[in-house]
Length: 452
Image (cartoon, rainbow, N blue to C red; front, side, top):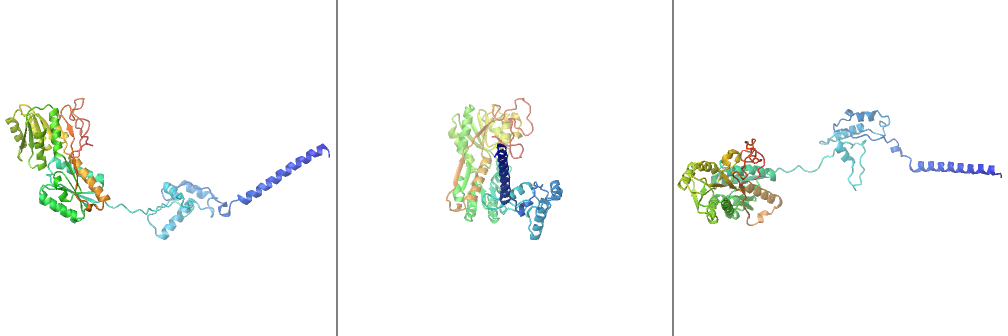
């Protein structure tokens, strides 16, 4: 064979091998990778439709319907899928199921849970665009918390208590039923009414224990969760209280003594007891007498009428009085007026806070310090603890004795150098401001958060 013929023979062999390889590749593709009949005409998927529930309103659905491939019987469109879903719902009488391929809901419906073995439905199926209803039960209504207080609703302290009882109810998630009555019989009636109404929790003060304690104990024996606050911690066990929250009155007296000492008070201190104050509050004067070392402490009980004139007469009778402590914030304006006529203005302090935005700056400056009476925290802490017991301690009826929480109060310092200082410009503050760039959340609800 000539060399030229040999070269052509080699080229022919190579061409033959290429043809054989191509044929084999075609056969393999047809055998293993050819689409099935069901999937041969699978259309391109259409994007999710908006949450209108009407596919015909969406230009993408109209565009898909105009596509000759997408409208073949074997390839249902998103619009036809929505129609099928609507028909299925109408036939079955289902309610509460959203129609339409709604953005995130459609995505959730198409995504099976990991490991579930389910195949996500395509857009063209009857389930497309349906949001499956939740089987979770609706939340139970908030339980009722009855608060029964003994104070005069005209007094600042009890205004604070009611105001912060409402806040506490919002915070701990209860429905508040609030009542305050100075008369013991009215409070007993309120407690009994709470029991009859089915309230699961009662929070009450323990003034007039001879009448109140039996009513509380009877409620506790019927399964009502009981808590108490304010004075009378020694009666909490007998009342069936699970929790009792109150101020440590002795600690309040010590705080006042420290403030008088820090202010350099040297001489007599007049401790003024308001009319109708609880017995425990009276003991503050006794503890102050034991604690304050700068001079004698004279306790004086005020009558119900004209407290300002009484204070003025007391200061006139003892012109060297160096310190003045009022056991109720309501007395502060009267004390400030009386001090204006005194020969020497004593250092003024109070147990309990007064809404400073109700006083002009020159009067605020007369208040050297306020020992906080914990009005807001007693009610909040007691309500939160009682709610906790109600929710997480169903066997609380087997508890014996009350958990007693007696809080040591803090002190809000005042005067020109304290929390009552004027703004740096010397101008009057904006409405709602108390002069040191924050406003109070006091009884009239004006202002914002209190930072005492």
